[in-house]
Image (tube, rainbow, N blue to C red; front, side, top):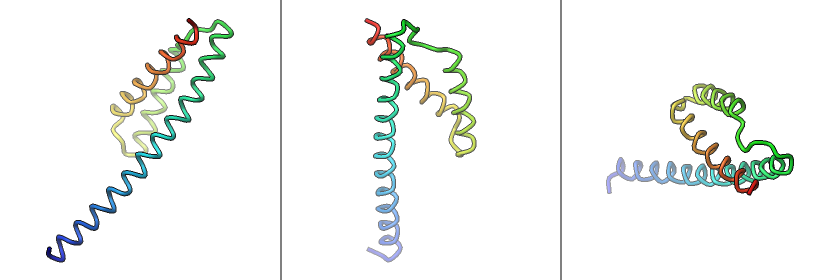
Length: 98
């Protein structure tokens, strides 16, 4: 293996280790987020509130798109990602109301 190839392999290993740590952070962060939304779902069910709040969801999407722009992340990707999460949360909230 040439020196350049070895340096590239070392860089690749470092990038992959960083990606693995970030993936773990994402999973644990989503876990914490869903714990909070489960509590919201139970509270909504106890007080006969609707499982969905379109006004809040729209504000959250706009906020996340703005954050994405600041983070140099594709805002459309961020919007799609949050829409996916919101859909999951609403399904969980509906289960609490059954």
